[in-house]
Image 1 (cartoon, rainbow, N blue to C red):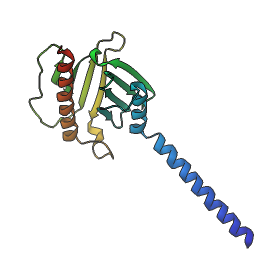
Image 2 (cartoon, rainbow, N blue to C red):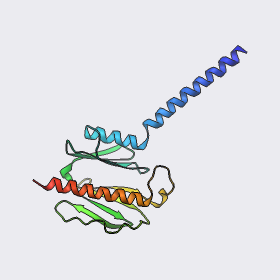
Image 3 (cartoon, one colour):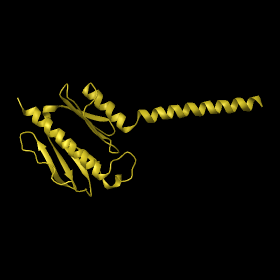
Length: 177
């Protein structure tokens, strides 16, 4: 009887240890945390502001102290870094049409209608880089409905609109002497 109790105790300890290791593994490989770590490494500090497209494995972060911007894709496996002055503009694409845009040196084209999108909400960041001229992030697609941690169409549209205002302020600030 002593051996059965010892075996059950050993199995319980092994199960608990495996659960802890599995939990740590899931925590470490969480998409948002992984993208945040990648961007923090690229920017030499915590990205602020930061935008992560959950379920898409893409993110963009800024370090306003150093004047850098970094983009990450493939759940943080790949990244590119730029100076903020290399960010040329940003577009908000709703259902395959440019609904709003802000480009350096051009007047802003604000989002006029907040009608619910049917196909996608996408932000397209345009950089002054011939090799990698743009970075696109889908914030919402119809298949996201009901998925845990993903925004609905209206929330994604409002977040995209906030980012458009943020990018316009950043682009305007970068131009002024």
